[in-house]
Image 1 (cartoon, rainbow, N blue to C red):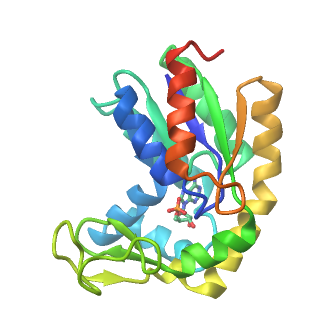
Image 2 (cartoon, protein in one colour):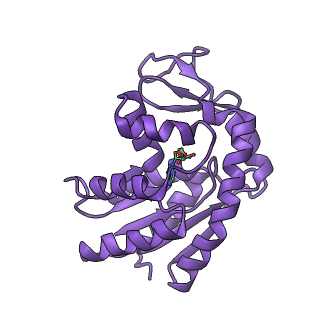
Length: 221
Ligand code: AMP
């Protein structure tokens, strides 16, 4: 099974995606994490991606698609995957269909986690990431036990360049411009599922994950 996550950056799709992937025994593939890993290891791919990531812009399609294709070929993708942050353009969505078709698979669900933008801006501004293990904290709602230090690995917590307010605004603009096309694309294929989340909706991304898992176990689609 292949599930595509369509929420905005900061919508909680990463959290929901990890839970769903673990519970349903699917690989969790985040293109943002793959780029950050490449950046940390200073690979040519990482250095190329950095110039776009730091500004909150999309990395060009050809580079991103190549990276995803190679990741889909890894051994943990036996039962399928939850794709977090891919596709982000119409070109990526079409090429994903081609890649999955070659593997005898398809996108079974496109899960759109819908959180109001004003909530997202505040959420991302409060985020801190661990330099060691990439664990994410919220300094208000989910602070580490010791300020600035990761509970899990003792690594240093920092605010990523793309979590700074001016970059967040740009990332949300980029998302706004590309999401409608993707939502229409998957709606036309009858695999779109939209779930509201956030403070106003009174639902967390864990609530969304739980509901979706139940439905999948009961035979979604
Ligand atoms: P994320 O953590 O998913 O918000 O991704 C962080 C950054 O990585 C984005 O702002 C983009 O610069 C880049 N990125 C991640 N996924 C993609 C994608 N599918 N297409 C283009 N750029 C991407």
